[in-house]
Amino acid sequence: MTVTLVPSLPTLVTPSRPDPLGVLGVPGEINLDYAASAPCARAASDAVAELLPWYASVHRGAGALSRRCTLAYERARQTVGDFLGARPDDHVIFTRNTTDALNLLARALPAGTTVVTFAGEHHANLLPWPRGSVRLPVPDGPGGAVRSLDAALSELSRDARPGLPVLVAVTGASNVTGERWPIADLARVAHRHGARILVDAAQLAPHAPVDLAVLDVDYLALSGHKLYAPFGAGVLVGRADWLDAAPPYLAGGGATSHVGAATHEVRWATGPARHEAGTPNLLGAVALAAVCEALAGADRDALHAREQALVARLRTGIAALPHVVELRTFGPDTPRVGIVSFVVAGRDSAEVAAHLATAHRIGVRDGLFCAHPLARRLLTEAATRSGRRDLPSTALRASLGLGTTRSDVDALLAALATLS
Image 1: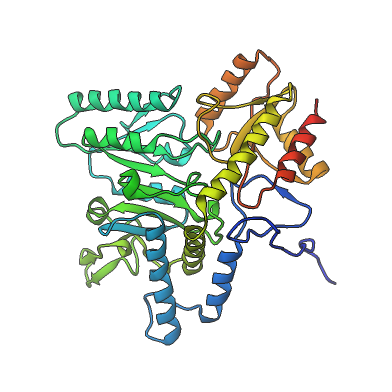
Image 2: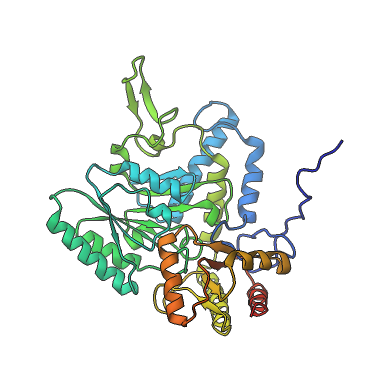
């Protein structure tokens, strides 16, 4: 007897859309959930397919296959570092995703470090930090964020013991609203107070260039699966000293330079290898590097202009629907990436998302987006701003990317109009 475990899948195609990566898609399906996991780019798929016949160990063998894979892995590290503006003495450490990268840095903090975050962060940038960290209220705008951080760091410098390190951890772009944060200004404030700064670039990097040197930030983390690369790879890039002084994130093969007979006879490696124990995710690293290389060669200004036109069309369309209310943290004209969250008055968000999927073949996200404190606050503010008492307790999120078209946006707006 033959048992069918899953239905047959439609053939993936590269839509005839003006993107340099050749984002893959399924005919007839409208994917507006890029912020959760972006679709795979043809650039990543091709790079993996080319390497697969050679697939072998990394840093573990002397054969031709192993040497080729080791070279591909280290070239991927260089490519990703170049894409992100890594400085010569920065480490580029491959991780599973942004959450993994932030947890790695949290484990590497020197004793006594105070971490300063904002309450509007994704859980990945709220939960890993040590007790005693400072969580600032959500500001009313980019300027308010800068002033709030300046005041908090001034107070810390007065109250904390001299010499104890401080790390500011902030998102580059909100995963709830898409609003961009003033990273360069926050970095200047942090450094003026002797603090370091980490940027969660998971939502910013797919939409805009991110350069550590230009922004003058100390650490940066991102996920490949937000950046059109599958296979569960991310990176932590940044200053080497804390990372080299910390215990390895994982203890195991590849993270050591010497292991003796006694349990205490261990010399740990320095550099990225210190925190990359075990067999690394070769295909993930290569896929991520291929996407970075393709984006580096693209006209990012043209891509940005195209995305901004789509975002403006979506937001204008939502504003014209009296039963749909957009969520936002800052003012309506704040720069943003291709993410828009909203609620449909009188309708449960999970039911709306299911309806969009089944009746219109449109995929969006519903819930609180792993940013519960921020999303709940914005839902309350949306009710106050709109004067409506029938808003649901969770939201919907439409997120755009390189494969999104004007007709995709119009299809969502038309479907939401039918829910009035």
